[in-house]
Image 1: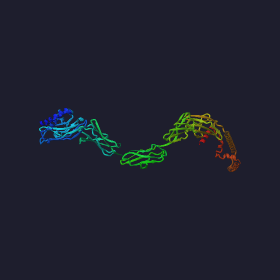
Image 2 (image 1 turned 30 degrees about the vertical axis):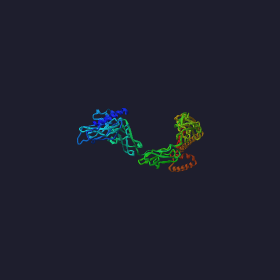
Image 3 (image 1 turned 180 degrees about the vertical axis):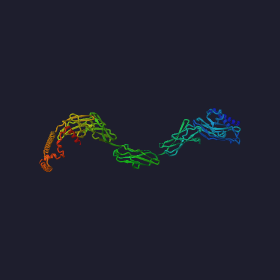
Image 4 (image 1 turned 120 degrees about the vertical axis):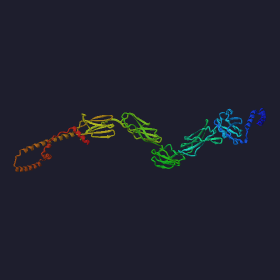
Length: 616
C-alpha cells in the first residue's frame, strides 16, 4: 500500500508544477483520486476470484427512476458469510450508495437504494428522480466481514433521456365490425416500481399490465384492450398514451374495419325537367366496396341489377325509387328516393270561402301545383280584363251580379290558368216583377223568386187565414218559379210570400175571374134544377092514376093487367124521354134521384180540390 502511495506522490509533483505553469489543474484532486482508486483495488484475497456482471450502459428517463442490474461473486471457498456492505461510486470517488447513509453524497441522499439482496449476490442499484446531472460512470465495491473487500472493475454508464419512447400498439391487420378484438400496447420504461399511467383512445375492457420484461436498456410492460370495433373506426387511429410524471407519449395503429354497406342512397341531379331523362347512382359506405346492386320501384318490383339506373321521360308523377347494395359482409338498402322534377303550374284554381253574403268583402287566393312554386300571378275578369298581379285578390262589396274571376300562375317552367270561378253569393229573396196570374180554362198564378239559398214560398188568400201549397216548382240557377192553379172559387187576390235564412219578400197578385167558367157553371145549375122539377111532376101524375083504378075479378084483372102491360110498353115507345129518366132507378126506388138537392160547390173547396188534383 505504501508503495502505491509513493507512486501517487511521484506523480503528484509533476502535475502540481504543470498546474501552475500551464493547465490550472487541481493536482491535489488528482492525487487523492489516485489514492482512492488504488485503495479500492486493494483486497486481501486474490482478485482473480472476484467478478461482477453489470451492463455497460443503461438509459433512464428524466424525472423517473433507473435500475442498474448487478450480480456479483466472491471466493467463498465453501464458507458462509452473512455480513455484507455494498458501496456504489460515481466516477471513482463520489459515494452514491452506502449502508451507512451518512457517507452518501448530498445529491444522492434519499434517491439511491439497493434493489437486490447482497446475501443473494444481487447488487442492483435504483436511483430515483433521475436528472441529467446523474449521467456518468458508476462502479460497485463489496465488503465482506471475515473475507475481505473488493472493488469491481466493471463500470456502467448511465445516460438520461428527457423524452420517453413512444408506446408500440399491436392489433390485427383487419378486424370485423361488431366482433371482439384484442389489442396490446408495449410501453418502454426504466423504472419497474414507477410505471406510467396508460390510457386508450377506444372504449373497452382493459387488463392489468404484464410483469416488466427486460428489453435491452429498457423494460417493457404490456397493456391490453378488448373492444368491439364499428364502421366508424375504419381508418381511424387506435391510440395508446403513456404518461411519465407529466411527460406524455402516444403510439397508435390505424384500424382497418370490414363492414357491410351503410348510408345507402340514390344519387342523382338535384333536379330534372319534366319529360327529360336522368341517371341514378346507388351510393354506399362499405368495406370492402359494394360489388353488386339492385333497383326497386315503390311497390317492390325489381327494375335492374347495376350500379346505375336510367329513367326516361320523368314526370311529376314518377314514383320514388330505392336501391340495395351488397358486399362480402352483407347488404343494406336506401330509402325510397323521390326525383325532384321541375314542371309548370298545374291544377290552378281560385280558392276562397264557400259562400259570402252580398255586400261583404272577400279575399281570393290563386292555388296551383308546381315545382318550383309559382312566383307570380295574374287575375282576370270574365271578359279578359286584368285585375291584379298578386297571389291574392280582394273583392269589395260583392253582389249577386259579380262576375266569375280566373287567375294565372307562373313559375320558371311555364304558366297555367284556372277556369272562371263564380262566387257563391248569399242574398235574401227578390220576387220578380214578371210574377202574375192568368185565367183561361184554369186560373194560374206564377211567383218568380231570385234568392240564394233557395226560398220557401207560401200562398195566402185575401184574409191570410188560409195558405195554399204550390202546384209545381221549377228551378233555374238562383231563379225559382212557383206555380199555383185554381178552378171555381179562386180568390180575386192572392199573396206570394218567399223567405230564406237571409230575409223575406212578398207580392200580392190579382187573379182575373174566368167568365166562360162562370157561364158554364150557371147553365149547369139551371139544367139540374129543371130536371128535378120534371121528375117531381111525373111522380105526382103517376100517383093519381093508380088511386082511381076499380077492383076487378081475378080473371078480368089478369086480362086487364095483360092489356095494361101491352099499353104500357106502347106508351114507353112513344114517350122515350120519360122512360130514360126512370130506367136507372131500382125497383121501389124509381124516384130517388129526383129528390136529390143540388148545391153549388164553394170556391174555397174548389181551389183546394184543384190543388190536390194538380199535386197528384
